[in-house]
Every structure is written in C-alpha cells, then in structure tokens.
Length: 340
Ligand code: NDP
Image 1 (tube, protein in one colour):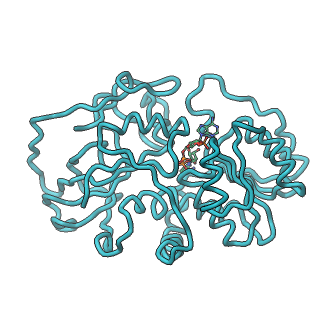
Image 2 (image 1 turned 90 degrees about the horizontal axis):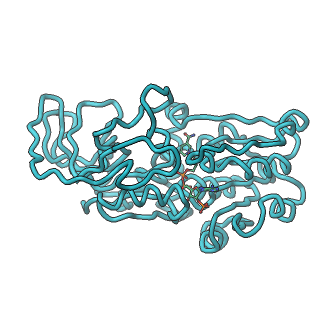
Image 3 (image 1 turned 45 degrees about the horizontal axis):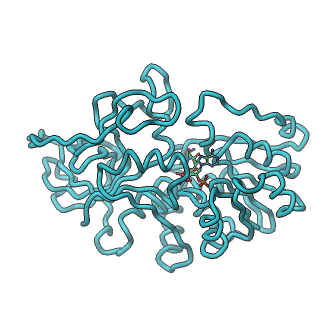
C-alpha cells in the first residue's frame, strides 16, 4: 500500500481528492546496482509537506510532490535487499522513503545508517522526531537566532507540537522563563505538568494578547514563531526592545486563500527587533553533531519528555496528515508502519 498524490489542494487537503492510499498487489521489484529495498517501520508527517502539495513550476526550498507518485517523508526503515555495499541487509536507516510499506531507494546522500537503532532502546520514532528534523529545528534555531540568555522570557506557539515541546524544554534548561500556547486544555495540561513550561494557555479560549499581558508583565524577549497571523501580531505587541523572533513557521497561513494581514509590523522598527527565518537544512552542518549529542543525553537520562502521536498503518496517513494541520495531533505526528 502506498499513498499517492492526486491533485494540488488550495486550502486543506482532502483525503481521496488530493491524496489516497492504493494497494499494488504486483509489487515485486528487481533492484539495479546501487539500489536497496527497504521495509518502512515509521515515517514522519510534517507541516512542510503541505508546501510540497503545489504545482512544480512554483519554486520553493523543497521539491513539489509529483502527481501519480507516492508522497515521500523522512522515515526509519530496515534494509531487506541490497545492491549497495554501504547498506547491508539488516541495517536500520534514516532516509526519505515513500508513504508506503516498502520503498526502493537509489543511492542518495540523504540516506544514512542509524548505528545504534537496535541497541539504544529508544522508540524508532525518535529518529524522525526529537533526535531528527524537528529536534534539530528547535535546538539550532533557538541557539542561532534566539540567542537566549538566562533570565529572559520566551513565548512559544504550537508549544505541544514536534518542535515546540523540545524548544520549551531547552529554553527552560538554559535558564529562561517559558510561556507556551496550544489549542486544547489537554495540551495545556501536558505543557504545565509534564513538559515543565512556566506558563501555558489555550489560545482558543483566551486571546494571545490578553494571555501575554497577564503572563509576561515585563514583556517577552524571544518569540518562537510557529503559527503566524494573529499570534504573531500579539507577540509583536509584547516583545521587548531588542527582542528576537525565530521565524520557524506560520501554520495558520498554510491552508487558506486569505492570508492574515499583520497590522503592527512597525514594532520591528521601534523596538529594534530581529526577525529571522530559516530552513532547518541551513543548520545541519554547524549544529547536527552538538544537537544529537546534547539532546540524546537529555533523552536517555530522562531529563526531557517527548510525546509522539502514532497513526497506525500507511492507509491512516492521509487522515493523520490533515489532522496534524488542524491540531488533532497531540505531540509529534508519525505513522507506525511495522515493528522492527
Ligand atoms: P506540530 O507538531 O506543532 O503540528 C502542527 C500544530 O500546529 C498543530 O498540532 C496545531 O496545534 C498547530 N496549529 C495548526 N493550525 C493552527 C492555527 N490556525 N493557529 C494556531 N496553531 C495552529 O508541527 P511541527 O512542530 O512539526 O511544526 C511547527 C511549525 O514549525 C510549523 O509552522 C512548521 O512549518 C515549522 N517548521 C519549520 C521548519 C523550518 O525548517 N523552518 C522545520 C520544522 C517545522 P494546536 O492544537 O496547538 O493548535
């Protein structure tokens, strides 16, 4: 079974119209030199994939999905047939795989063996979550753009998600006061009781503006931006002079034809704010090693928690993807395909 990309959505993607699971009973690949056949174990669903659901003529940082082909994702997989000596049968790899059970992979620079995947006892989803792309996003952007100093205050939107929950714990460990927003009371409870945020609120129940007024009476120094729109507008009003905005994502704007017009950008000038965007790949070379060592140690020593939301089976992936764009996910969204 593979999930096939069918058509470009303009707003939220619709299962069956824009993508759908299809089973191919005749799948019986013959490998060419350099190729491997992998059995996918888990793959990641991420907001950036919404940006790949577009006409290929519109350039962006990541290639568009191809109509009629399986969608792809970062995944963890076991090599079950190999015509490439770099990846012997039995190795566990991190690679761009299809939203499917089995994928034939050419020799790509993005494929790498996870040497301790079997021994580490960490859930395999860790390698696409807290120790993978979203984890590096949180760690590197917080350091490089946030430039956090102990005693400062940070506000993180989409705080219970893949990036937000780690960003909050790192910021706290580095001596900051942390404020998070999320879209349900259960998520807020999780942020306060398990993740260790100093403050958290449900932005669907109270305005971000009012919440920041109460929870950050001295203003915020860093805004970790995951949401955009009204949330950004509220943060701009509460940032202190020389504040930093880590422009990570603006998910409230991904599925709408009517972008929100932020009305108070003049704050950037008057408060000398820094607002800087990034794509996580920018940080790979400089930060990956430090990130992996530091965050893995925190994880192994149970100094951080990391909640994962697992959809079961390839056929559940499209629904889970739309759910993730809508906030139905509670924690990092992945698809569990098979046990190791
Ligand atoms: P999450 O796990 O946080 O999932 C997305 C969450 O966004 C949902 O759970 C929902 O949580 C929230 N959300 C959805 N719609 C809205 C809305 N209209 N208003 C407010 N919140 C909303 O995803 P990630 O942690 O993977 O990604 C978070 C952000 O980081 C995204 O913007 C993504 O694009 C960006 N990103 C950027 C990268 C880069 O390289 N620049 C790399 C990785 C991620 P809730 O219930 O709280 O509303």
